[in-house]
Length: 267
Image (cartoon, rainbow, N blue to C red; front, top):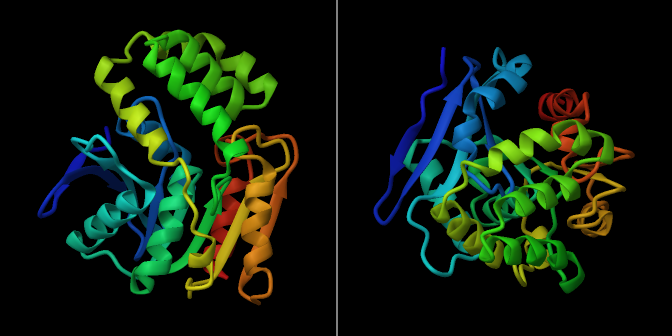
């Protein structure tokens, strides 16, 4: 049965999401940057997380519809927190991947009642100039409307070489369905990441946190995860795990990733 895409309507925006599972505990997933909306991959995501659906009711949120011309991470966090509140979500287990982790970090700092525990996957609390270079390259390809080049470069940077080669033809096929609207949205979301700095917000986070990174992260670099760790490792409820060999998208490629998250959330 196909997963139903739903829309939460707040005062000034609407945001698509989907949910699945029948557990008592809410688990919210905030995905990273994607060239096309993750709503199109709802069935695949539900299948990937099927091992958790007896324990959690799992919510996956998109970014808001009708993006403004400028849309920062903090504005994304504001809107996403409002979407949580509109749906009555609080005290959630929160998993943010890459840019989704940046959004999650701000939500946890500014709305401690919304987050029970948090996992930050291949994310950053401070996007420095060197960490923005890959994003800038993607942005330029999107501006040039080089759909195939963008999808291939995106896959090359987030996946290990063997995974990239395995899915290269799939990426080329996916590029054929990219619209001008998809590209415009992608450009705005990338621009919103530029200059993001929430290092001081880390001190305000009250919930237990696990940071999970990869040493071969060629998008944000492993230093981004380690900076989060350096600011939180004095806390007894902080955990750090670094993968070897799985690339930036370890949250998709490491076979034990979801089991590792589950152990943290249930500990």
